[in-house]
Figure: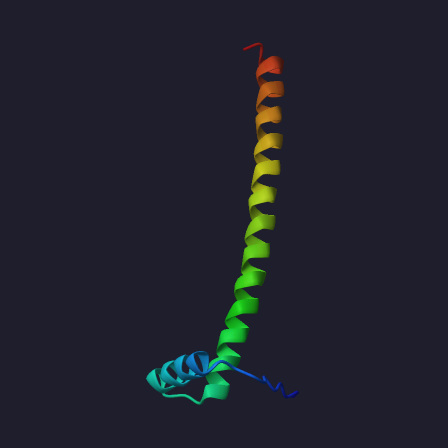
Length: 76
């Protein structure tokens, strides 16, 4: 595992981190690791969701085009 050192943290921010970590009953280190993990997980999920939405749009285009062709073939 690697270590990260964050310097010159604003006192108010430090206090907020301390308060939140105490609320959760975990260390500041563990709290900040969770924050970072959630940030990157959230980013990954957004990317996956965007790809899924694009896939759905493309599939709908293909389905609609196939439906048009089937109607032509069936004489509708």
